[in-house]
Image: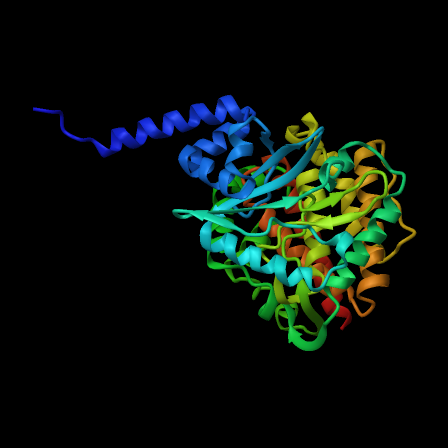
Length: 407
């Protein structure tokens, strides 16, 4: 009698055979190879074939490399497709089929808003296989992320680049409306998931945090999370007239692509696009990402306990007199802190003068507070940066109290 059919063993053999095809024909680097294994080799081959053509994938015309993802949970790959003597690069995004479909639809909405040079051209369709979905974005040959651009150490042309970013955001924010609202209460409360993660962080790291920040300030932050902002009552109830409209929703330094020569800007990853978002959220998210994720990310300083004292220089950005003081410059012996801080000053200037003239200090501080708390629970942020984050957050709360006292 024949042996018993084992579907699990058969599936495993098919996966191994497909993984061998991927390694021999697509030549992924090690980090990409690990991600492909997570997705499943059979699934990945199907998605690649559907997006770029089976002939290309089986002929060695495609190479795959790692593209650092954001925090949305998607897998990202750089796909280089050989066309004649040229390579055409794409960013391939893989995630849950339903999420990918929503994001692909958002790109269609953005297409109607942005000018062609700022529109990230996606593949004609998104494709799916089982629970997975994917689509590609034409990222052009010389484009790099803002994170990589800043790590190059270049300062020339930053004003032009931020001006171009402002123009893209202004197009995105074209149709906005002003509404009166209790800002934190109605726009910036933590989700139940983030709330629980933050409470766990403060409980787990309490002793460590108190070695660097006063016990009372740590307790104030923990209480803020526990009450979802209600303990800072004046801020929780404070009324603002804010402007809302289309926002990107996840504007971090990996979702901003830059042409280093022309400083042209293209935004990618519209998975969290919000049609009724508070206009300060995008720039506030980008600012906190520059501080917590980009600053010293390519250096041992990112994991050095001595860096916490060095990073305190950026707290000057939170002085009320400096929030919208565009002549302000941080002077420090650390050139990267100086570069990132001065970049943020110009970023705020574009937000205040070119995009949102009605913006108040209290509004912006609320946005910074919300995103800064979120970075405490992101897994790829070093514990040293998170410890510094408690100092940064405490300073924001102090300034919000000062703002409330003046109103």
